[in-house]
Image 1 (cartoon, rainbow, N blue to C red):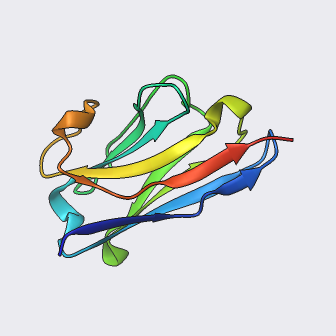
Image 2 (cartoon, rainbow, N blue to C red):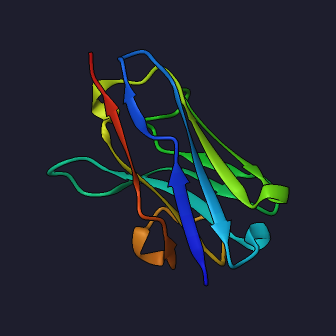
Length: 123
């Protein structure tokens, strides 16, 4: 059974940090593109960080560039999202998604999705 499971969300103060994890089971991520999308209340889902598992190539949305870092551990079949200098506008449900092809910023091109993890940035 193919599954992506996110963890690591929570409540953090503005300026703080969180690290999200996305663990895959049921398939090998080595040739996949993995993305982190987020959806805030009342807003459309947006892609924020992307990584190719094969070579580690990354891409970031402008809204998180310089603050978020996506990384991978192929041995653990896991992708991480390190989020620093968090802002209230980063509050959202964060989803990881996978596709068996190159990086795409289009959510409908991703075949596998996790259940999401809530990130709340508030004082």
